[in-house]
Image (cartoon, rainbow, N blue to C red):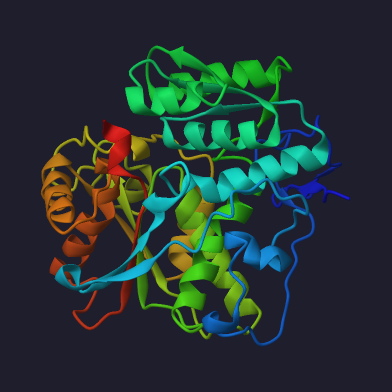
Length: 366
């Protein structure tokens, strides 16, 4: 039976079902009322059966149905020029890490008997939700900015989902989507609000630890918009640490786009960081993260930080990535650019062991 939802702020509990709310009446994001916490010694990676991809870690996931392409276990490769390891999240079926959350979100939708899902996205999450909805045989409406990249629009349309293009800001897209949800037009498969999405993104941490012999790096540098991968990483590493599977937590260091850096501002930093605006990292241009308080708590708990970067250092990092064979979209370059800045400012020592996810394919910019 699907697990119910609970509000960690006011303790209200909601029964699982296709009509379950997308957030608590108090306005707080909901979580699963029951979260599995397996214990015991994990198998070495060489002995793990990873043919099910991220669902290898099903014991950690409060979802029984599997709507899947066997996604996951993306490569973790050495990147000598950055003195780091890159996790190649852009090799997922739809070309971005958002497939981690899409597989678990649509799996829960099937469990609940949902007939239609609705999502708002700058492109990647929408393409992922649309693709997995097609896999599940569920209708999907995807609300996107009017100027969404053509490649992402086609990825949504060609799997049978209905893109709804909205003029205005990214916030206007969300507002239009929420109006449809509140009017009862579908179940909100939100990458920012739905707890099932974060159940998927926390498998990023499980894979990193498994690929490193059940150890954690000193730090992980991640792009930070709504924080779906950032919070997923935090939850995953914390789950492993609480279970005694790994010893310790990595520092989580965020990278925001200048002009869209509410987390940096909340930490007392400069949202522009002296770099002006950032027009190319469209995937993280989020002015009001749905789980901003949780992001700040994750930063504090891991002795982490967040910085904002303008277009120039990101474009430089993007060129460098492409020349080294990492064909990624512009938003991906924010984290490697931030890694360089963190080292220049002494936040990271030269000897620190660092992992950086590369989150979206360059094919999506065509």
